[in-house]
Image 1: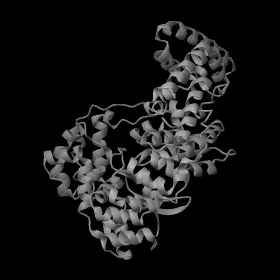
Image 2: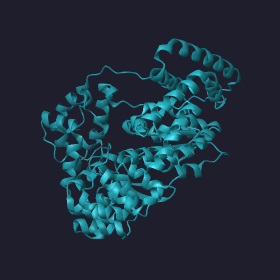
Image 3: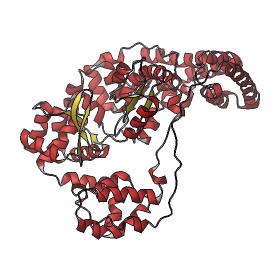
Image 4: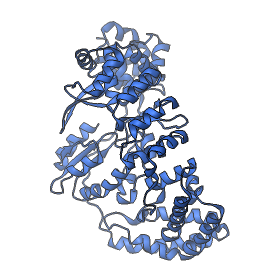
Length: 527
């Protein structure tokens, strides 16, 4: 899909394609003097949400907005569950298009004919022999008509290696699609040691290894874990190309990566179920890779498969303690439990010495510093002096900016003592609800004339509703009517100055649904 859009962007708008792999690279490669098509895959994590990178993303969003105005185009892809987590931490106000120009590809809404054609193509052009295709083609109509069909599973069905555990019965083929993760894990378990070493090398290298593969620390770790040579590891990764690995290239050079993010998930599960491999992983993987993959017991993070047992905490502290302050604070916030936090802070107590002042230009709820302070408070590790200063900032965010984060999120409210909560609620009524016109004027001043003002006050309205619900439910109609009247007037005035974005629509073809017999699609799949 991305490649097709890149070709279209070049043909229709004359855009040069750029495929950055990080927000810093994106910022560096934006050229205001030319139209560009930026294609960013798995922007906020391939298999799990990488919250540690959100500060960098928030810093680059104004550059993206400027590039859009200059005519550049952006394709940013993400798994739905990762996007749902990421959007809560993004400063959407810096790039409204990010939250208003989304397309969700819902595989479950593909027509039966579309799914059948996908399955046909993968089988017809895969490496399965004729007898395999003949044996299973009668089972395919039921599969494509079911709810578990995924294009990636269809690709695996067309590959001998990835379908090696398949039972060639209706139940077996259906189960292949119903339990794709289990089948892939079984495939990984059945691999030869040199193939496991090749995948392990990619895993400990955050899914990317320069080609040709050099004899570095990560390669040595993989070779030691599986008892293989560098030559056999290199041969294996070549043999796995286009099945479990992929040889790719970008502006930095040629490299190896996983064919699909789920391959990384499976090798992660394989490592996690073997304590010996966990220790080797902790000793040999890059510290930045560890911080992006592991969690402590009791922490639930979608996509994180390696749980570090407490017996390895000393080793983990040694490996991580030299990482940058911001990275360590992010790890403590999202991946650590109290026990590990105690051990790390015993060595890095300076992590608690930070400027308490919170941002003035976006919500507290998306500020990584506030998240860290709240989590340390929950762990019982935040010094009282620091907690008081943090509490003052939280209260100030309410009456200065009508930021309802502290009321909307229990982990922030828990920072406040009962007297502080009472003070907060008094400020809500006196400084927010009784001064709504002032806050509407303040938010009006942040509007960019290139964006429609229609939804500019949505965040403020949500906050006002929460404030009313908390302290003045009896004044609900009075306050909301007044607020809506004031914002309607503001939007009317802003609309007079709205310049509007210059849209250059690409041609759109109408989707024509077929009523063909699904079984007929597979008629010649074994020819």
